[in-house]
Amino acid sequence: MTAPGPAAPSGTPPRPRSRTVFAAAHVVADPRADTTPEGPAALDWDATLAFRHHLWAHGLGVAEAMDTAQRGAGLDWPRAAELIRRTAAEARAVGGRLACGVGTDQLPPRGATLAGVRAAYEEQLAVAEDAGARPVLMASRQLAALGAGPDAYRDLYGHLLRQTTRPVILHWLGPMFDPALAGYWGSPDLDAATETLLGIIADRPGAVDGVKVSLLDASREVRLRRRLKAVGAAAGTSGKKKGAGVRCYTGDDLHYPELIAGDAHGFSDALLGVFDPLAPLAAEALRRLDAGDPAGFRAVLDPTLPLARHLFAPPTRYYKTGVVLLAWLAGHQSHFTMVGGLQSARSLPHLRRAHELAAALGLFPDPDLAAARMRALLAVHGAEEASTP
Image (cartoon, rainbow, N blue to C red; front, side, top):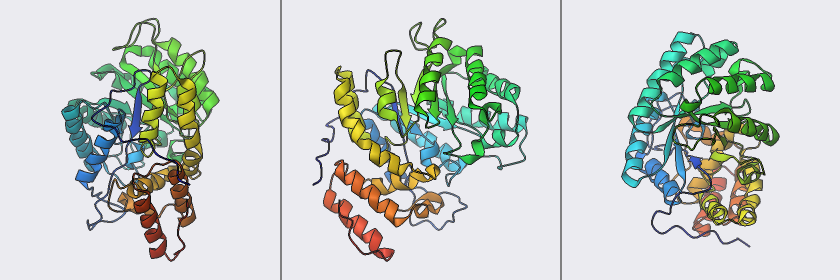
């Protein structure tokens, strides 16, 4: 029996009051484009932007041109820059909250210099700021490949933070999402890396809105969250009350209900790829949290964990395939094609199970359409048995 899903919003609902929440959004490929996995990426702009409006219509912010949008996994920088500009224009038109990923992926994977990494960050930072978006300084593969120590990170990030025109979000993306980022912040030891990150923030607390933590380690995130609260508390950060400190945005797609709910010492805000498929349920849960009903919040979000943990199962970096599958099954796009050919990154049994779990949550506006599309996918690959949620 399929559970009833939350009703679609009528009009644009207000943003959540109790938490700042972004959904990292996927991109919709153009299935008619004659391109290759090496690129350049070809997007269906109408469908891609329509999905951003879907997220805004549920009151969620959009985190654009980040890992979920296949940065470094099919989406090249020229297309990412265009995506940032186009989405920013749409955000201005509807008053949608927007943050955009800033990285160094215009550089080759290896052979960069610290000066080249800095210049690449500056180029992308200018695009995001010119578009009016809050920048998210994403982790740099090219910087990680240099094997630089903590001092180099502190110098580079300090330089970038001195020139930003608005507070940025720093992103700590763990190697489960991208193996090339092992040893980020200058050390493979996570405790040492944490000290470097906190030192960077302490040098310029007013330039940092928050940190998106994508380590899939809830206890470590809670410890970091408590320290972030203290880092900027005395001076306050721009746009927040004195004593508010630096936000911790959970990027933990395996433990998000407990981290957003928080504890007696604080809570995490959110910037999550899993909120791309879960947007209706995330919005309903946040409305309950805003109404002072944390138990109701957990009652809505806790049942989504089996789906999230299935989508983000190792190898975690291929979670995007399941995210795009669910967007297709839900009717947000007309096909299951991804930039870089990433639709082939998960097995048919994995995709079938994703459909079953999502259907049980009531995520599909038209369950019959979702079931028919799943059967067609299985059939074209020689597995003709129906998916039966």
